Length: 142
Image (cartoon, rainbow, N blue to C red; front, side, top):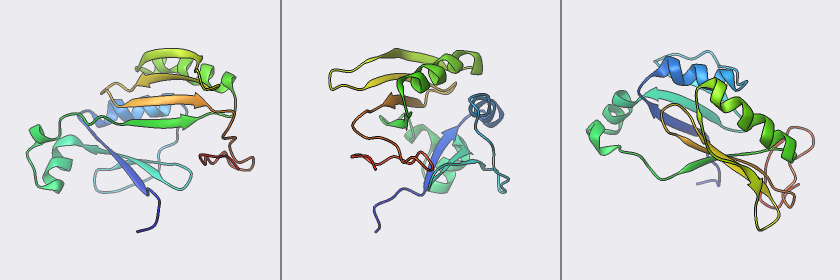
């Protein structure tokens, strides 16, 4: 197995509302079929899929899905990018969980949740600069 994630799927209750949230943050939807809403990322895709259909696909009862303890991370080129993204969250329908602030290790970050509770960290890590050409992230930078 190669060291990569190809598709991140969020099981959601209200597809239109969650899609509108990500579109309000500036993301562009990709044409799809079979009830999936997708947003292409750098090397991955974020897919939105009805929660009940996801449980059916896995072969479990929807009550078994619960809420996983996981965060999705977005790294910005600079601190201003973190501030700008978190400023858009409330008007898009999400909730800022932790306003942006300096972190003890020298970075800058904050957290938000989308309207169904999926948690995102938005960060600037000066020790892991993004690739200049396309903004790709790698732990130790490019």
